[in-house]
Length: 126
Image (cartoon, rainbow, N blue to C red):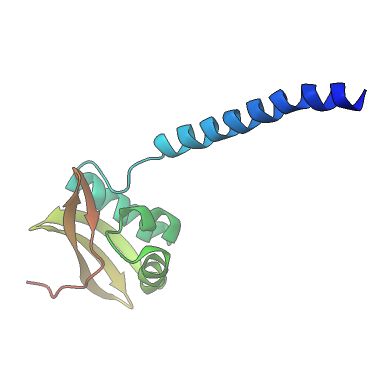
């Protein structure tokens, strides 16, 4: 009886393993691409992430740095009121007010494989 149970269990283990691997491959293939499809869409995503103070929303649109850079960038805006953002001259410009003083934060935009991402290097206003 044990032999019969063992011989009928092997095909099910193989089917389960193949099914699990197929599910993993499909999940990875359907994972959304990082970045945005246009610079204007990118500006909207960055602005919304900073307004919500949500580093999880900011992380996928960063060219480099990952979670640590996303956290520090959103922390920089935690005490500010983000008024808006737009794309201009190769950068996402985020307008914000902190302690009554209005300012801008520029994030240079890069294109990677047809998707637009921001580089978290701070550039001077120009």
